[in-house]
Length: 252
Image (tube, rainbow, N blue to C red):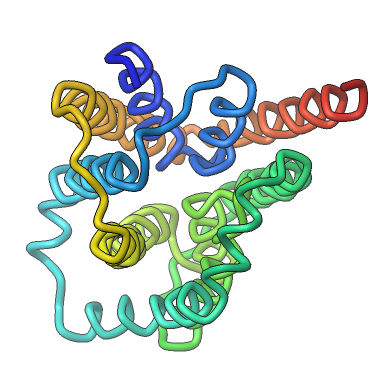
């Protein structure tokens, strides 16, 4: 992998990890269309570490305010995706080989973004309960599918549960900490088992910095869009991308 390719993949990861457009889906499409292949699983761990760092920096004030009960709700919401990720690891990995599946999942993401736009028009401020935490967690488990946005799914589930937009936004991304951390752990175990060799450092560092900076930028953008309610833009984008992908797959 060249430095330029690592810059592109890191930027794509950082932008799409948090914007409701699916980072996994975009990485699969970029690799398929442009022949940019990641330098193995170690590079994936590096990118996840970068986006995890962006969450810690952006939500540091919220992390300092965490109570024991809020931590408990976050752990509760983490369980469904953790169970699915461990029990169906091989089946999930096989889904990353299908561009057509990604396109269909992007259509689901388009619908999710329309749902977010709908709920953002409503005034609501319910408290987060264990029932809503489980609901958000179950929805996050479905978002393991490449092409379905984790951030979009969990924000939608939070709004659907009656949370205020700020509360839904914060819970979604605080929930990403164990989600991204869990993915990193599974990948790290694969690295140990495979005895992977550390790739060149320069592309790794480039990818990390790109993912970290673009991750912070996308979080700031998403926070503003939640206030102005322009999520329909993401819906049009993901639907349009899905149609283009399906057309290309059908033609070729």
